[in-house]
Image (tube, rainbow, N blue to C red; front, side, top):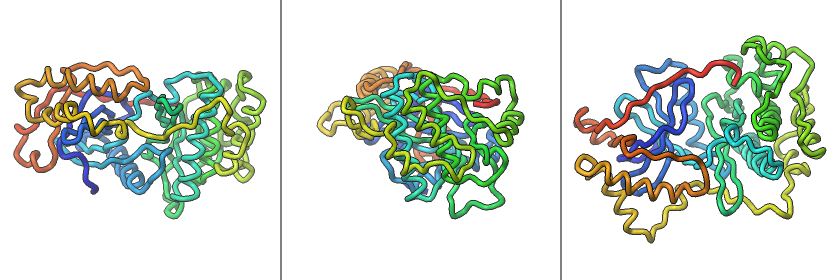
Length: 363
């Protein structure tokens, strides 16, 4: 296990999945803002715990400006935690953009991520979709990074024992049929994600409305259709989709080829995205702010509300690129690392409770 923040503050909930919960967090020793993805060790199904461990093992080997960064992992207070780069502007699924220049910029970032995964890292993501594309709207232009590697597989390790993962409506036909995933499956899902972004989340398969997951996979896997191309997308955009959404995986373009397609070519009106995370924004010259963060854990019991109120202003500054971040002082929880945890439950200051729900269906 790599080193993670040994003393950090858990903030508001950013998102929730089938079992994992993602919170905002602050490293008490550095003031860095990050996201923490957590699972209860005793309350979560074994499959979910294995998925998180798979994500940890894969993410810690990846180094790309177009993939959300792994910052460490730990086990504290009955939770398994994955520390991740924080992207402040939500997900492509939430953005409901419809702005083709923006769609192109985000699709370009995802294509760069897939080229790296397929050609350098030897990894197939297996669940490319809008909710797994994290966004940042900064001064350097829009940036998107691929996240959630829970069902990702290494090409070298793929075998008949692979357990099918992914989301039905974004799933390539061959994967829906139970075949082993290949890079071409991610390319199909990229095409679906472009449609999702271009339409603001409208259904990829209107004729599958009302189908359950099994029925949808049967029709996607064994039917003859492809997702409906958005009428509002330009001709070059629709041509790009035809390169992604070919039912025969061998006929789909690779991520490398897609990056040369005119749809992903940079327009003269676009600025070059700067694929940075919020962690890089912390100013080393802002001594007062750093001292504020350093004092959170030491003074939380005596002055918790006041200190968090001050910290959240700095967090607002860090996240100024976008996103609806509602800060509540009572929503913070102090988390200490393994050394303090050995001292007993009294060393942990519980300040918030987290509920978990299971998300079923096609999305």
